[in-house]
Length: 393
Figure 1 (spheres, helix red, strand yellow):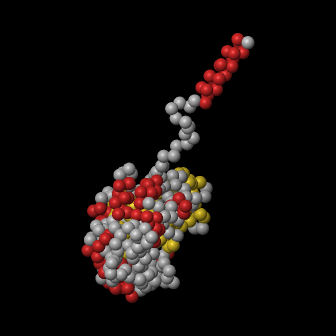
Figure 2: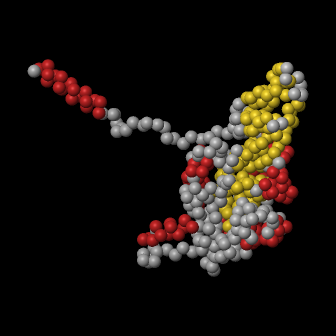
Figure 3: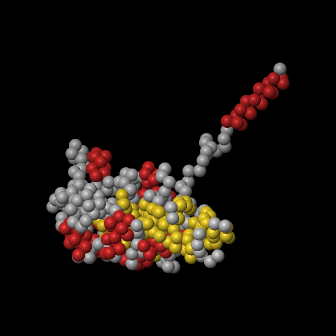
């Protein structure tokens, strides 16, 4: 009986010890700290290669996430630079916010009256103008960015007008978004330029059957108001716009124009989110402006790299090394090494060579030079880049 009692007491204490998990009641099953994608991309002409998304929205216009979440998302996606470009004229989320805050209004039955939240498709704001603080979302993003020092923010906004004849335009490096709006479409762009902003012509083929100049575009281009243009926006690529960018000396932009989360769109793809590659000395505003105004940018979209031919070739040559690796009866054997985070697809006279990131592949040449068409690098007139490597046996 005594032994039974001792055993019972031991079991009770044993069970108590097993159930007690220390000062916390839970055990962590995995680490949920955010993880940052790390890009390895080459310098070109002594300039660093920075990854950027220059067209992004939060729920302070018509996006679906907060400015702080946009910052965290951009950092996690490996971006070096992000421009928050909430719309001036299109702020559909504002109506829902005001409904939510109805009980705060002096007249709780009426609530707050949404004022000029949708004045972008030929409908202008009334005499009250835009009453929202259009700088607020950037201030929230800037506050959040203190936790992510690797990410540089550009203050911006999107001037969103009737899309078919007028178009949309991102203003980058703005000072005060509250002073940009004008009922005159061109004057709104001029107001941004007066602040020293650079103007990107957004998605020039959106809702249109052609990317030819409209009368309004002829006017603002002739006035020198446009500095850059989107060659891709989300999944849409505008081949003829690459030609325009080269002809007009405009910086080229590939942007997500993200409204949902990037994870929901790009998370299961085999490529990264859309981004602009900027070649600059550093990430200061002065260096970035210099890069834009000297057209030192390429676009990345869906695994394709797009831009002006010479810059595209310099980027590829800095990314890939081709060296002799012996001879065979069939010819010279070479090793092709990809030193970057981007994949390449090479066409050797009909033979496709897949060159994944950070991989080396072998190929046999019939002569003393390798000539490859890089199938996922596009320049003017929708042509693929052709690169020649001369080799000594």
